[in-house]
Amino acid sequence: MIIDAHSHLWLKQDAVVDGFPIRTLQPNGSRSEFFGEERQMLPPFMIDGKNTAEVFLSNMDYAQVGAAVVVQEVIDGNQNAYLTEVQAKYPDRFFCMGMAWTLEEAKTVQAAGLKGIAFPGHRMKESLHTLMPVFKFMEEQDMVLSMCLGEDPRQIAEMAEVIQECPKLKVAIGHFGMVTTPAFESQVKLALEGPNVMIESGGITWLYNSEFYPYPSAVRSIRQAADWVGIDRLMWGSDYPRTITAITYRMSYDFIIKSSELTEEEKSLFLGQNARHFYGFKNLPELPYIKNMSE
Image: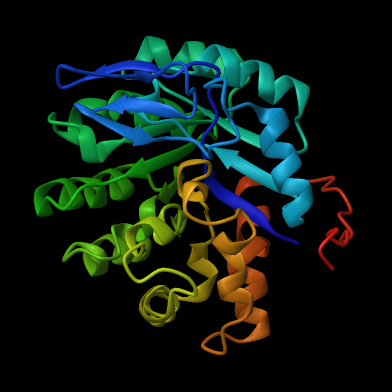
């Protein structure tokens, strides 16, 4: 059983961040204008600029991934409306996060049926304390907080204060604590600040892209994090679809399966069992391996 704890979906990428437009380019809809550069935002076969649930489900079925958590990032624009549709259409396969910056917006997200709220904290200039009413509401409503943090020690300390102030709030720290930066240890050890804090590895193959597959340093980092906080606090995430411009979706996790650094029990917990318990996934599909035409 494999569950992806960090992925993205959008119907249309259209945002402005720090004065820079971020949007799909034409005629090649797999590329985007990104902070003044042209970037390969999607795999080259996704040519209409749409990163849909149906294409992702095809990738998930092929890679035998039973379910996925869908988070949001400001660089993609607000996808609340689309993710509300996805959550209603595929309730057993997706756990969709909304985007909200105020208490009223959080209430709208919750009323729409979205199960959590994602914050790209690494792009925030404000203190996390300004979001405390939102965090309190999420704790009361049993919603999950997805938080990606930057390298700023003050922001990491503020996150620790949020966890202590909201002890029942479920928190998933993204990007594996920015594993290739000096912030790695302090972010991972946020899992020790409260009983409901997890660390997910979305983007770990991006952060170790210069090393590339099979990412031996990434595996060693997972081993190190497990030694710090326990393997039961760690979850696999792919950061689909951006990471599969360099590798296939299956490659984003099979380097863990093939590694000898983790036990079979640790791999099972990291790749799916922990996420299933944390997010409450049920009724996961049976996904048998289908041979490729090249086999």
